[in-house]
Length: 167
Image (tube, rainbow, N blue to C red; front, top):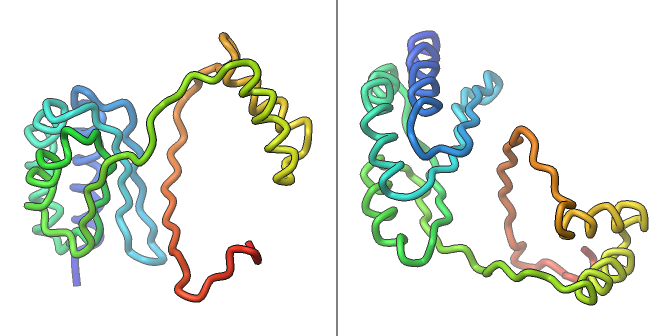
């Protein structure tokens, strides 16, 4: 078993180093004592920022590993032209579940007609009209107000015998 106190000491140092690294728009880390999981979500702006991250974070990361921590999962969604670079950079950490994929969509600037259709569709899908209006308004010029980021990590599984009509 790993040394929890020692691991958390170095996890705190690792987090501090990540937050002080260049090119990070979000560093959100926590520890779940019920599962003994160290959970980290970082949004890193490209290979140069990752190289900076490694240079800043590796000393504390190595001490975490030395305290009995192992990487279980590493999932990255990256630009298509950087998949090979990120794969080579991240695979060395030895996560038992390792995925590097490209984002599956591109950004489209919506027209007013498209936004009206979007609102109608949201309502049709069951979203209350007031929330549909608020959600669509965030796509209008000046309608989006950026605040302090909140991190959300989602994992979904497609059920082998799932029935989409029951969703």
